Amino acid sequence: RLQKLDKGALCRPLNTGSELWLDGGHNPAAGRVLAAALADMEERHPKPLFLICGMLANKDAAGFLENFQGLATAVHTVPVPGEASGLPADRLAATARKLGFQSIAHDNAATAIAIIQNERPDHDVRIVICGSLYLAGAILKQSDYIPR
Image (cartoon, rainbow, N blue to C red):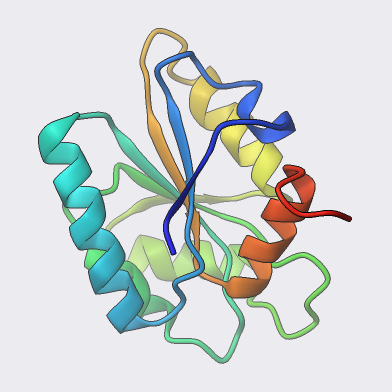
């Protein structure tokens, strides 16, 4: 499910009008649904869209990401915390670049969020963390949405 995050350390670097969202979608069908929801948001309240994506190695990363072509400004990639079967962030970034996205790998979502907003200090942005249920769970814990 698509959930807006509005508290916690991950939100602190964001401008007041910037948005942080979380979705556990991790396959091409989920990517289509998420992209449609984000396109609707873009139509109603335009903001540059940035994905922060982490995926497991056994998932169809290209099939998931291709849904966001023409919609996302860039794809920032992260490892899935604590998952040995996670796709390395640099390999996921390479997949995103093959699809035509600007993409850079980061060690974690907090770093990616800070960089996205710091590169656009005078602009509100929409950031969506996606690609893995495991990543979504880790983000919810980190943001104090569920008990540790």
